[in-house]
Length: 420
Image 1 (tube, rainbow, N blue to C red):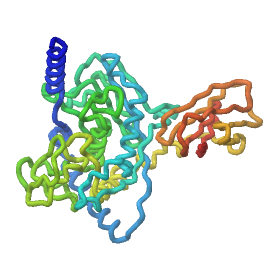
Image 2 (image 1 turned 180 degrees about the vertical axis):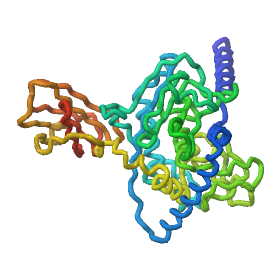
Image 3 (image 1 turned 30 degrees about the vertical axis):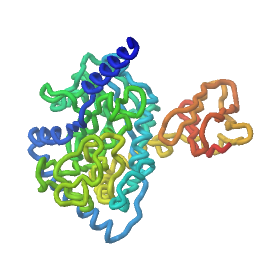
């Protein structure tokens, strides 16, 4: 009986703890947008012109029926931390990039949960995200910066996370990088509980990007249920690509619009995991499984074809410079290739890859790296006085990987298929 009572008490304590820490999704993007409009009188005019250009691009795309290109966006993640636990691991950062790539390329398994009435709307956006491989000075990087700070929360209104002098980290050139700040907490005029916020295209480049609370970033480590599938950044990246909330942010009415033709009119946001059909505005059911609603991560599963067109319009308009910035391998700028001096020999039988280099100075340091195509470093070797090495790939899944060979200013990179 004593054990039974203890178990009940423990369960009640856990329930109280969970209810105290659980919260509904709270996105600060529209609040940030309103502050930008107040601080920049010309912002509204730029946004209006941008909207005209977006609609024209979408119309031309439909008329010409052009095939979509694959767009690669280099990401830099600025980790701001006050405590050790807030200094999230590289693995947690990589898990978020993987989540973005799943969601933006229709590789997420939970598309099966989309109601049949909306399955024909599920889009493969065709945007790939990778960790930046070069910093603004042309040096090699893993795309992660780490900054110790004395702040427990960062103010949304003043964009404190985005400046060195307010305890944050200055943005990398926003015409070349997608800046993401991971912070201990976000507040607005003293109000806390904001999961993240994004800056819409057309604003100040010094503050361009997304800010995410470290509790809701990635799929491992500190990622906290029910926002532990990486979809807070999926949602905020949608705003960064000029998507609005699916209900059009006209709360409690049916007059709002997200400027997307194929999303059903919706009266308000949805939370948690509603049952279909959740009907508002005389529709056939709210599209609550859309990434731009407020539901829990496990209940989000899709962008629509209309949202895809809108995002691609921005990537071919206001944000076109980022897709051409070359900060994602294998298209990085300012690389000196060694051409035919490096030879790579996959050996499936031995679960190895042999790398050989010819007519090069072996007395200076040589670095060999193997990464996945998102930029995550998997194997690294620093060598001297050697003309070849073997990489053990027995623990890696079959698929395409990237080998990078570096010696001083000389860099060679090549994709390699690993098979077992």
